[in-house]
Length: 189
Length: 128
Image (cartoon, rainbow over all chains, first blue to last red; front, side):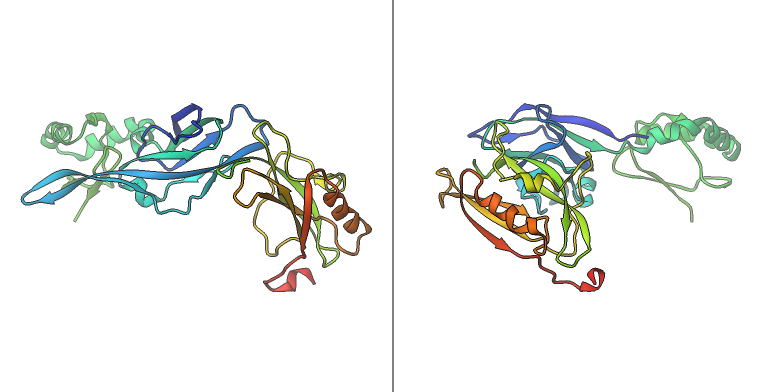
């Protein structure tokens, strides 16, 4: 299964002014291509990645959305080499925070920058959907079969035919949901 | 050439270590102008050691290759100079060693050349 890439910048960089890409999040690494150079050439460009730290901060009894400002990623990013991958450390990817790449190029160069990310398990389940559906129907009691899909629909946007069970349990005792639709874990005591 | 953007091309050289007959394919980065004009002095004797193929030579190494640093006049820089490194692929016992460095010194625009020999700070076992 190939990773998916979204384009966060395409075109000529600014000279005499910084160049900023679109924001991205949940990204594993960045790839830069240089369309107007021969395949064995590249650029070294001064760059940094900033994180837009809008976070939920508990203030009193509530979680308030607070803008802590743009902060630089504390990774050893000096000159980026267009021939190398720019990796985003896992801690930043896991935070789901918005980030952007900032370039300072002294003359205009043509770049295409892609953010590469792994697609969530929603796609991975698809080939096994039928098998899982059968396993699910055979292990759940009739009551749970009707009620469970509605419960899950309330919590996530995943349609009921993406449910799956683990092992040969008679019932599913407890469901735990992750912060995004890419994580669903089932806990059994 | 301004320091915050550099156009480059990587080539591979067959490098002969001081510890004959050890040889390694090393990466040499050649810097160019915005329009592609090459600035790093790549001379015929160095080109003779170029290894063909599109794959990039890994950067990892357990020793520092011998290299020259050539100084060019550059009015855009604070110190008014640009420096470029060339890996010298010939061992000092090779007659091409001296000729290679002379070629670099005679490259148009080169004002002065300094040289640093092959350096091993790790265990020499692999080279003996």
